Image (cartoon, rainbow, N blue to C red; front, side):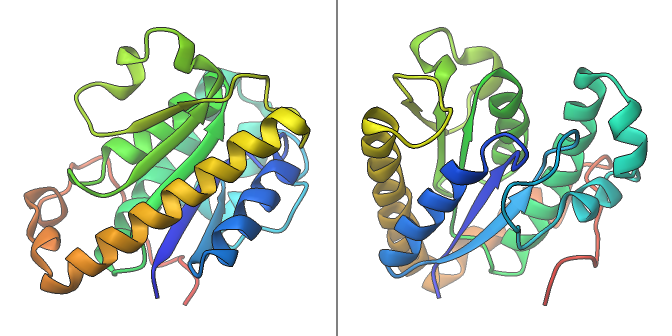
Amino acid sequence: MTTVVLLGTLDTKGPEYAYVRDCIQAAQCKVTLMDAGSKGVPQIQPDISREVVARAAHSDIAQLERADQATAIRTMARGATSLVVELFARGRLHGIMAIGGGGGSTLAACAMKALPLGVPKLLVSTLAAGDVRPFVGAMDISIMYSVADITGINSVTERILTNAAAAIASMAQAYDHFELSGRARLHPYLTHPPKDIISTSSLPS
């Protein structure tokens, strides 16, 4: 079944991710929700917990709670990237989406850039009105401006997130159909991943 990975910090954006998850599922896609938060308490239950993400980066949440924000983001980005690459390699990722401000966008973009060209990548961000080159680089990450701060579901964010969910669901389904040939998984990135991408067997079955 076509699967979309939602990557985010569920201690700050739980209701927003719950809303997007429900919209994507209504579009007949499976959702894998990955929590890359490290400071507060998750507001909703993920499919892949922050503890699993931290372990994939050879760290743990207790350690990251004491770390500065930049270190925590860097570490969770490394763990999330490892898990996202593995999900794709197993055929369990046909698209990825994230919602974020500065830190969340940077974290999500790191994981998205690890995926091959053509895999749908959508980032709904407050930073989209500015220069996005520093965290997008040369990759095919689609950026959608959130217009308003993403702090709950309201008349503005509901419309933006509804559109974003519809977009990633459609892109993932189109990619899944193309993927029947299996050609995308021959991408050399997945055959020879960088040394700092840690393979892990901690993913849920």
